[in-house]
Amino acid sequence: MILNKAATLTKGFAAALLGTFFLTSCDQLGDLDGVIPGGGSGGGGNSQMKMYKVQLNPLNNSGVTGTATVMMNEDGEFEVITDVMGLAPSMVHPQHIHGFVMENMADKDAMCPPPSAAGADGLLTLEDGLPFYGPVLIPLDDKLVPLTADNFPIATSAGTISYGGKVMTSSLVSAFDAMHNGTQTEKDLELDKRVIVIHGAYVYYDKVVPADSREAKWAEYQPTLPVACGELVEMK
Image (cartoon, rainbow, N blue to C red):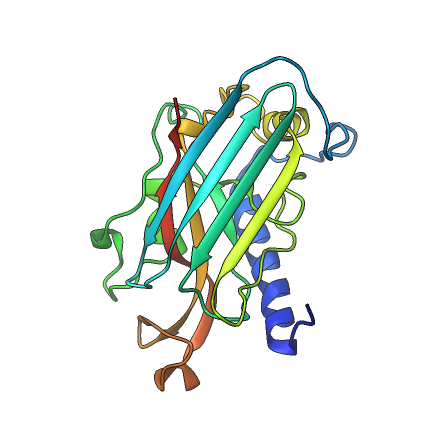
């Protein structure tokens, strides 16, 4: 796909902004060079596959909906699939697994914020949602590991994203433990306490507007704005 100039610039801005915001908000981030084993496909073992389903529901009256699936084999691969619709077409849409790992909060379940979490302007910002869904734990970008924001998916001209990311579970666990050293993280990443959040929308006078609307001509694209959220539910 050939990206237009606006989408390319927004893509770089979103990755840089989200990466800077979350990396500077954690005091225990370290250099992962030499810590993370090689990723990629393959792997095996006899451990049981765990599967989690996510129903993505709109935030900020965005109309964005979708589903996600997370599959993890401790001796094999960690895979995330997201299918999202109703997005701003041809724009970057950061997506992450959020949750709590800080000391004294590691047992807290992440949840999707209610409309009442929005500020006085009625717009639910990234910061407004943090007390509910927590900081970014795993950016769902083109690499997954290392846990730093890189290239996020760009919506099609129809406003949809079909994303698939895969990495060796051992690589993800090593990166996760190194990133949150000493904060009581579990080897299984405690996925049943996490949520997935999708970001990115046009905003005009503190309201999300469709990309094809008249207001969109004057709207600002905010790549960090939460537009959909869903809790991970393990399939037994």
